[in-house]
Length: 204
Image (cartoon, rainbow, N blue to C red; front, side, top):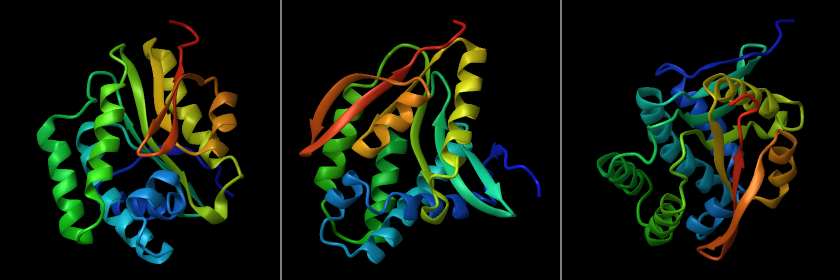
């Protein structure tokens, strides 16, 4: 059996990555708050539409990665290298417009408030930004998320820069702390506790 490795997401695999992320984030507090009137099934569809655009944008401008197991994608991460994020306003607005066109009316104001808050608190120090990391629900707890994190951390350490992420799921705090991330700020955004986390490079 071939050992799973992290490899780049391509345009060809971007749709599959969006589906993995959509299922992985279906019960995320931010997803539930923004799509609060959606059933879980409809929320997965909405998130898949959103992540399709997010992943494609990251393919063009960032460094998204995936992990396959027995020929099936089981984990994906949306990552931006230093100097790329925050994205230009045009890109951010196009993501929002495509989300509304694809999903119909929903609480877009909460989504905008969330984005504005995280952008306002985004660090200015050079870093790799882990915007999203998700593992297929049936494959969680098997080390695939850690594999993605190690690939990210290796790149950041080689470049001598930090890693940064926002986490709104308390269950994930220890997962990221095990990889060397520390909580640098705790906020409440759209009523959701949110932890901003930073990992300094081991060999700056």
